[in-house]
Amino acid sequence: MASYSEVGKEAVQAKGWFGAYKWLILRRLSQVSVFLLFLLGPLAGVWIIKGNLSSSLLLDRVPMTEPILFLQMLAAGMAPAVDALIGVLIVSLFYLLVGGRVFCSWVCPLNWVTDAAYWTRERLGIRGGARFSRGLRYWMLGMVVVLSAVTGTLAFEMFNPVSIVQRGIIFGMGLAWAVILAVFLFDLLVAKRGWCSHLCPMGGLYGLIGQLSPLRIRADQRASCNDCMDCFAVCPEPQVIKPALKGAGKGVGPVILAGECTNCGRCIDVCSKDVFNFGLRFNNEEKVESLRGTTQQP
Image (cartoon, rainbow, N blue to C red; front, side, top):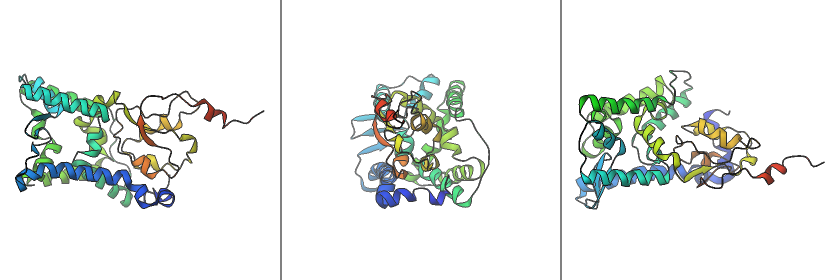
């Protein structure tokens, strides 16, 4: 695998700078746009969205409720209001359709922090650190439910870094700076991509929601792969790539089906051979004709 500073250079040469960063740019624009919508009310008196990422109201009519907040409410024995029920159904259905962990890569404010920590870690050549199972986030999700049930409160919301940072951006940073620094240092010095890819219970829940999402990243041109490994270098969940990319001849289709995929699109950006693209989970059969083309004729 090339050094991190070399990752994506072939893509820049083949597709140009914008082509090699298109999806990253669009993700940043999405993240900024979401927060501008929340900021319009307090700063300009234009209330398109009221509330925060945990619970909000769109255009004074459409409720939106964060699934992990709703899960805590149920665990704590709270009777959810009708608006909360409608809101969680709307949000869950949306992320079910577009890929659950799209929230992590296209909306979550901590994505900037964890990406910056990973970039810094690779630039400084920091290796090693704590190793956590990627399944740990599901145990963390279970702990959130148990803690809410035992305390009868929305326990995770008291220290949820996503909520703290988002409220800080809107209403004044304060404690949010400490949370940002803690997450950054944790990912930089303790564990590579430690928070988002291993610990965050919100990511775990969205991964479960997105298991059956129709919108997927596909490796339809995997026969063109030159094994540069750039996609593995930039992917926050590199374990999801191998089955789709290297499954040719093994009966494995080209669609990345793992719920942990964030649909961030970076693998599409950095691939100079245009192996990856956004598509649907359907038609995931291996193309027999492409396999025949790779074998010698008698």
